[in-house]
Length: 436
Image 1 (cartoon, one colour):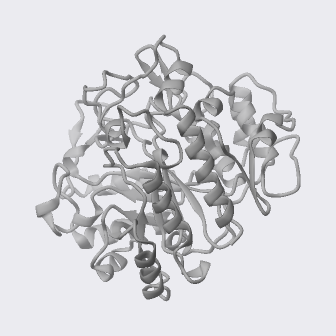
Image 2: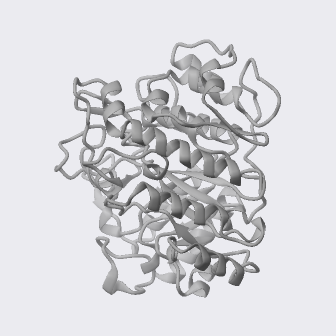
Image 3: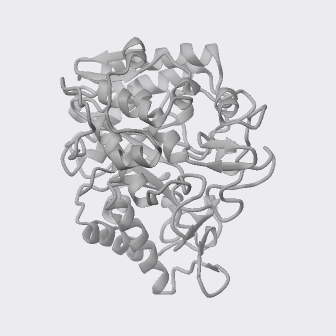
């Protein structure tokens, strides 16, 4: 298999020879052999080149070796097939941090690579997993940003249409598949697992056709679930190992009174088959399927094939989180998770409350092997500007650039000095946890 990181560098006009990155050493957080960048503003990373990001990741990698050229073979961090049962899932809105150039949105995968050094790597006993918010094209306005009150939802996706113009750099001579592989190799070198968000509400999915207009997805049409399976298997084969499933709680018509998606959902047995087939066809037995709010009836979701679900364990109460950790410590196939925040977060939570929830996620257990999974959003590591929030950036795609440049957008998307101070405190929490 080719060295896709070197191919990416060459496609971007860079040479493949790497040198130690002094800036990273000056902003280093450590926990044993674990290293990452902290006490920073995201714009400081996003303004750097992809090559500088690669040099940063090579400089701070967990081994004691500096690689003058990116290594050919990178393996995913090995925590066994059940790694997802105890992982911390950190969702990065790769569309929001993409390059906003005028009215265009592009190259989100390059921005995702640049921000990787500031994601704490996995601990000794459990994995950290980055979830990318967007992979597939969104139905309306893909490749463009709009005003802050114009809908441009990331929850409406198009299958059979390659990958999002918001995310893939289509101006270079490297395929979307190879760009995702490069991202995954770099994340794995940094000690992270990776995954992506998907949707299952039928009216939120379109199927692109070369011979006519797009058609709406239909779970009762045998060709459509087959396409869904194959699209997801392709991504697993590119190195992703986790899938976050929006609206998973309601699969099979369960608790539909609280369903806020649009359109029909797969039947229970149908979704069992789909998850089984994704695992089987990819040959990846370690895939973690995380379901939105798929908690409460633990047996229902475990038997469905899920690994974990959100929004059951009370995140603000350390003792209750620890109690649930004790209750479920022998359940190694499935466990509900602690939610610091989710994709519906509308902001307003204090920094102190966020830090308290992260503390519960990282430390509320008797032994590290008993840890419950947890769910965080980009904002839980890098606070967003005060007039936006996680959910707003999922539903809309505004540029905050004041001069039409990507650099200005990155500067204004996040908070400034207090955000740096908060990021430093998050780094302190992880520094205590990663050597456990």
